[in-house]
Image (tube, rainbow, N blue to C red):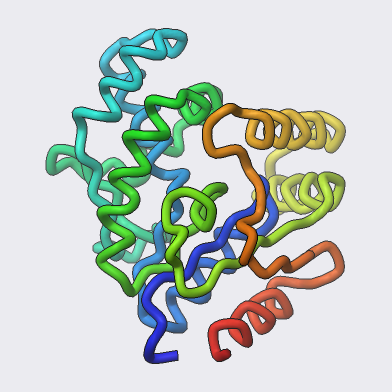
Length: 225
């Protein structure tokens, strides 16, 4: 595995990409980079600056003008990496509910995706990275050494998310979660720019009947090849 430099993991929401990506990065000693965090960062910045989320041009300009840095975690507080903008650590700020409610809108804008793809490539091409998203193998880093497309049915992904929320002691409605998962899938797979789909040379892992350890072992075996 010493020759590996870039591992790309794509797939729909709640398929387990983040868990897999983090474990692989930790095992290999690589940077773990969930590209969705960049879209959250731009969403948070737009909210902070009072930019209307429906103003595509303004949000896109923000993504073009603001450099975002992603680095190995500097604190042991549960974070998987640091997200820094203008010297400010915003790693946990981008997890606010208001960001959750708007990030899908921002991520669908072609100008935002184009600008952040440039930033993601800047970081990814440094190498020694496990990059997770929805268009890594197809658009961001088509030259990745290993491309994995992690999938699961909408029902299974909704079940996992529902269980995760309940384990935190919060309440959740399964049907509502399933509806949101299906809606996110429609947005991701039908957008004009970089729609969600496996790269032609990606290896598909269906995690419907696999637990996290089994998925990790399958992915690790691909890296060992």
